[in-house]
Structures are given as C-alpha cells and as structure tokens.
Image (tube, rainbow, N blue to C red; front, side, top):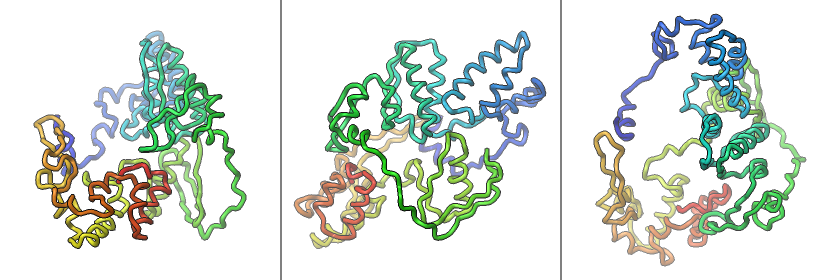
Length: 395
C-alpha cells in the first residue's frame, strides 16, 4: 500500500461520490434482492441497533432463529452501553473517540479470552451522566471476566467503581510526574490533593443569569434523527446543549447550526490542522512577538529567529528532523544531525535575551516564559494558555 504521505497527496486529485449501482449499500444486486420479512440486507444496515434488536427477535425460523439470537445478544450489548442509536452501516471513521472505545469494549466482552490487560484513555469523554454509569458497568464486567482494567479518567463516577485509584500530580507538566495518592476511592475523597479537594467541592448554583441580546433561530432541522426542529438560541449568553448520547446534540449544533451561521467559530476536539512546523506559541500568534523582542535586544533582523526563513538549519530546512520516504512504507523520521533537533543554525543561538537563546525560550513552559518577558502584548497571549490550563506546555 502507499505511504500515508503519498495517500494524502493523491487524495487532492480524487472525488468521492455514492455508487450509482448499489446506492451506497456496498452489496451486489443478488445480495440486495434477498429479503427477510420484506427487509433487505441494506435495510438491516440502515436500522438503528435498538430497532434491529426488535426485528431480530421476531425471527423464529429453525435455521435462522439461532443465528438471529446470537446476533441479537451482541447488539443488546451495544444498547446496554448507550450505542443503540448507531446503525450497522455507520462508517467507523465517523465515530467519536468515546464511541469507538465503547465499541471495542463490546467486542472484547463477547470474547472467551481471560487474563488480558485492557487500557482505556478517558472513555467517558463527552458522555451523558446516564451513559457514564453504563460505561462503569461495562468496565466492571470486563474485570469480572478475569481481566485487568486500567483506565485514565477524570470522571468521579468512573473513579468510584475502581477497586484502586492512583492520583498523579501534584500539578501538570514539570510540576507533575509523582504519585500523590493511591488507594480506594473513599480515601481519595478525603486526601489533601487537587483531585481530593475537587471531589469535596460543591458546585455552586448560578444565581445571576445574563439577559440575551438577541436570537439565533434555526428552522426545520431534520438532519439524521432531528424531527423538523424550530429552535432559537439566545445571543450574547452561554448556552449549554445537553442530552444522552445519540439524542442529536452534535447534529443540531455542529451540523445544522453551523450551516445556518457559517461565520460561527467552531472549536471541537479534532486535531489542529496546522503545518508540521507549527508549535503552540506560533498557533496562538505569540512567536512573532518573541522574535521581535530578540531582534530588538540584539540589533538584528527578526527573520533570523524564524526556523522557516533566515534562521533555519540548512540540514533539515528548519524542521528539526529528516524524513526519508520509502516505497510502499511509511516514511522514516530521524533527528537532524546538524542542529540536533533545535531547528536553528548555530549563529542564531549566540543571540540572547535574559541569558536565554531562542531555543531555550521555545523549550520553556508558558508559565516560565511569562517571567522572562515584559512586553504587554506578548504576556497577554502567553497568559491565555494559563486561562485554559495549558501553562505546562512547552512553547
């Protein structure tokens, strides 16, 4: 197969459209012509899992009945963890991270293997409280089959079902990396750690509610499971849209609302679509300000402190690494031997601000960099990282 880089290059020249022969069902004409109680395989695939369970329950044929019962047993596990709204023909690439993890859990629940170790990374992200409870039940069932289950998690309801809790800290980044507590959840609630104190804190009820400055209406929303909704969102206020998994929240907000208001700034959990040269400090627009400070303090051009132009290492063109394409394999990446991953050529490192080179500054966390500079515009941008809890990231 082609390497990922070559596939991405080829994708720019390809167009995808629904197949005219099968209508997207992926099956040939002979398969689509078969029926069970008037339903074709494509009809089965388009059904939500919860509805399909009921359809399979009506099959009592001596040959097909046992097969339908086995399929129904697996599908009922999906319903049990809040995935009953999925259809069988749903592309896995469209599933959220949490949906994908739960789907994998169901697969392993049906396995006869025991003595395995399962690792889950924040499986409760984006889940409604009701579905978090179902997730906890599923984790316990995996354990009860004779397996070891490790879960990276923040949700108290998931922590509560654990037999043993390990609390890392005391803070993030360079101030983390230590085990500050281990033991049962009940003891964690009493522990003098950030997690323990957070578990004891009561969330205050908001008393003062801001008045809206207008309305943002959406009419006739009927995408996916939306039933022709007419909705009006208040403008100038913070509105939370909630509901169980699959109730239509993301469809209403991320698909219908954004289509009606294309100027809306959409911030989701997808990967940042920046270039391979981007860094946190360049993404928030603070790198130019840092370069100007270095240029002013050293009496040189600001372009010297850019690994995209004059300051770039000649060996790697400022990438810090060298990528070698291999036919029919993913490229092999190695650290640049000339700059040792620093991206800049040696002359750049002679220029200092507060005794630090540009490489030293970019290796700092935002919290440390704030103490080095006094430029108001630069400090304002660096402090935005603190506002969202990202001061532990290196620039």
